Image 1 (spheres, rainbow, N blue to C red):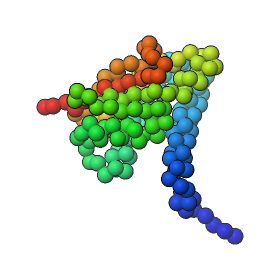
Image 2: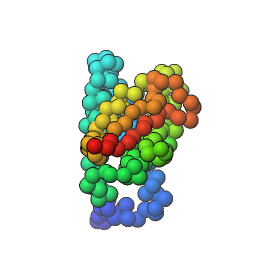
Image 3: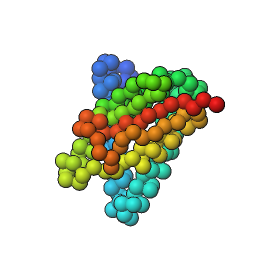
Image 4: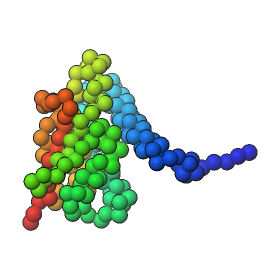
Length: 176
């Protein structure tokens, strides 16, 4: 009887297939998050679901930062380039039309194609006010990458935004 391992299966995939699989994993992670949120919302209420969601994303951001630093062999993030690279490699944001740009000594991280928000709009639910969740996520992620990193939200629902920019975050390294 033949035996296989997942490592062998990954090695049999082309580079393009591996990229597509990474994107699929990002979408699946968003799907789990959505089901989890709806479950808590149905069991309790929207406010409780948001409260728990923010804490989950804070912890997730911290863990994601730790794992991506290890993967990239980075001890402490010290450059804006490293911030951009890590952001673009995250399974969640890397799957939402993520863009990163450095200008005027700061890094700008954005989402240009937010599938979950678009799905909510198609279903007639309107945009989810995700700014609090984004703040919690970036608190966890950036503190883990380097405690000297600071950020602010430029735009994120419930804020008004253009169709091709769902959220944008400004990140910089604080000098002593």
